[in-house]
Amino acid sequence: MAEGSSSDCLGEIVKMFRTYEDYLDSQIRPIDLFYLEDRNMARQLLVLGSLGNSFKNEEFETMKAAEASTSRLASKSQQKKLASAGKELKDNFLRALAEREEANRSGKMASIIFISGKNSLGQEISGYIDYSHRLKTEDFEPYFSGKKRLMPRPTDLSYYNWVGEPKCNDSLNYEVLTENINGMLFRNKKDRKILDVDPEASPGHSYVQISVQSDLYVQVVIYDHIF
Image 1 (spheres, rainbow, N blue to C red):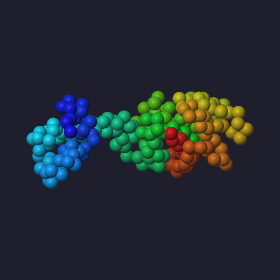
Image 2: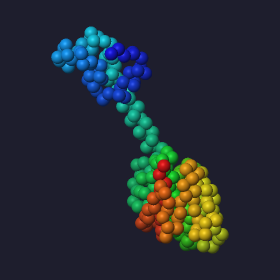
Image 3: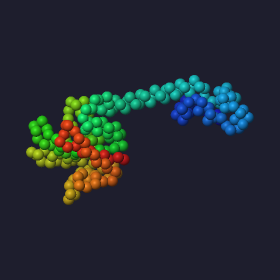
Image 4: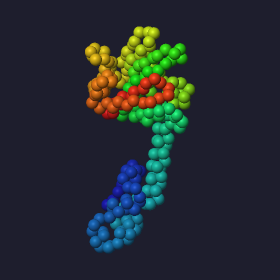
């Protein structure tokens, strides 16, 4: 029943048990209860050292408090990294982006966003955006704050301006496949799964297609790829 007295050992114990009493109960053997016939007495003897060496309540509670503090700090740190944290999001599209921000930053998800909208000159622009790529290479705080509007760029997966030449580019997460007779495809570089953006076809295995109604754009479609 003896436990090491190192802080590393205590740290592991604190993670395993919710309360000090739970920890003490884990040290009590069936034979101890057979002779003592009282769990509280067995706990007291553990604390006194009569049944073996155990960490004291003060040590356990101190480490538990430290663990809780570390967890809170980690949570606050994660929130600071999210550009959407604390923002008042009034549009469906911005809320959809916020819901996917953490997953796309952490690599759990690789979303592609199709946007069709008009620029400041009234020209219709459309294209596909690798959301995770843009999050890693651009500050999204102005978008979530409403200071800027997310639009496709010539450097995105695809870009089409009605008065210019269409463009397409590979991104951090996707390869653009243009040889498909039915239209453009995107292949994820991580698991090689292919996304078909043909509205008449299924998007493909492990992809989910969601249309988003937005006051900011003519059309928005999000393709979520979950690993």
